Length: 104
Figure 1 (cartoon, rainbow, N blue to C red):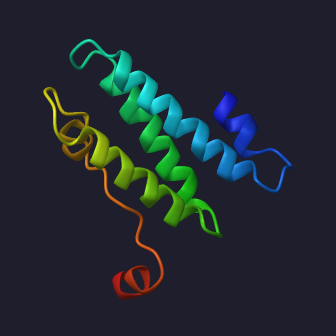
Figure 2: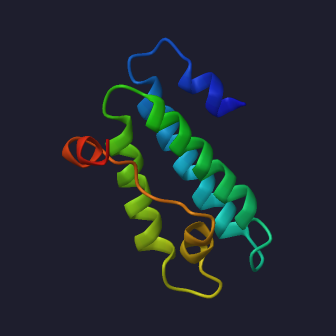
């Protein structure tokens, strides 16, 4: 709910702020997870962020891809691996620019 309020805010940096808040929330959930118990919630947050960013018209897709790169870097290693959990759920980067046009 807080993410939605921030995303929909009138502040010029509303989307940047919401993306940062969601990334922090995902990292907090993963950090507090005992085994994989909070991975589903963290993955759902990541999926919501991806959906919002892919529908946006400015730099949001690239910003999401940066978040995903940081999550991969931070959580690829380790047992259990949150990154592997995300990949099993089909998480991918958002195609932007030339990549998106070539897929159309």
